[in-house]
Length: 158
Image (cartoon, rainbow, N blue to C red; front, side, top):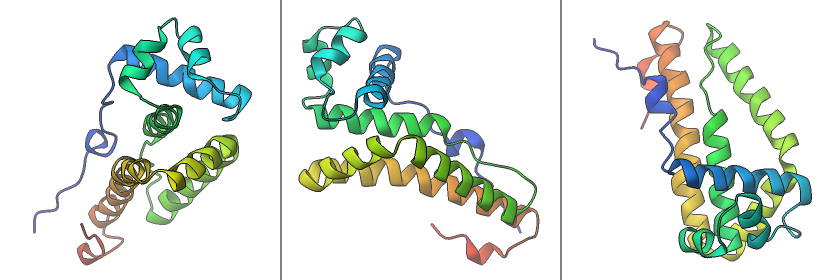
């Protein structure tokens, strides 16, 4: 039997953004954390990122799209698969990380969910990008458990 294990690189995909775009998204997350969604403006993001409003709007036509992209990129950057040596430990570690991230970014998550509920296209993007990341992370952890003999290969499905 050949067991194929996802690598960390497969689990944590490379950023789809250029370095400049990633910088703008990081600024967006910082401003969201400091001021909240309602007070965030594209103008403030552009100013803090030393970019023109046109540059930001060209890539993200609305504030909601900018915030969703920033949220997904922020999660992607911290989505490293745990390797505690046991499936139980890995799942507990993932739960702790999720809880910490959720508590730290509760207002951003709330704002993203409100905007996603208003815009079907944003919901599609969230499903495609964010949930795809989460699924890859869980698949990686389960495959590690299969490799260690903790669970059967049958448990891991695509």
